[in-house]
Image 1: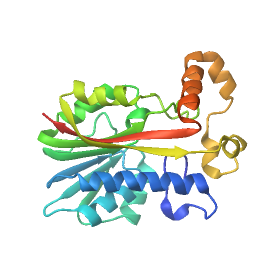
Image 2: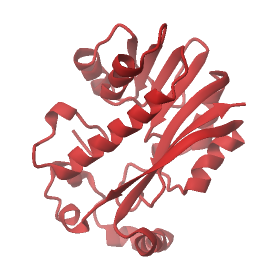
Image 3: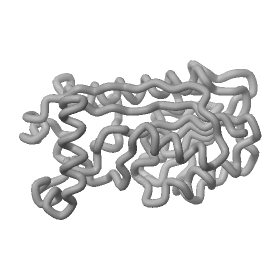
Length: 237
């Protein structure tokens, strides 16, 4: 388990940040499930598969089937063992080259886009596999995250995240914002297992990227110590 890949059954009872993060992930999947259209679903960057399983077992409609892909082979093998379901096919796939092999009715990709060097390319690639009127359900942090998380390659605002989809021919159907308040001291002390993956030598990072320090200071002034995430449903025009 790391900052980016949670195994629910591996979380420790006293691991607060891990349990809070899992709660946020599940909340996103429940939101996605409530907005799914009947038909084929792609869950892109599915991790170890618990979200795909939730969609299949709680929100599967009629002939709904799910193709769930992740770039990490170990995560896919774990998903195939721990979250096997007749409606789910787990595959190893890179986000940029993911191919469903059929026209999709829904795309679910949660906490993915901030990891990509070319998020516009990903959105357009997946949009090309989505039926007209189909739904693309996505999420991303809309407070700074690159300074703390070395796996994140993008910082988004609500406006810049939405614009990715508007530029690719989508309109927004529904959305909500999650707020995760945090105490920075335990994270800086790296007491919990997941916090060990936080960026090291943040001061050096700020020296090399002063604009990211400004973003962080503005975020603290506006929202305090909090992570905010936008979860949105977009419809292909």
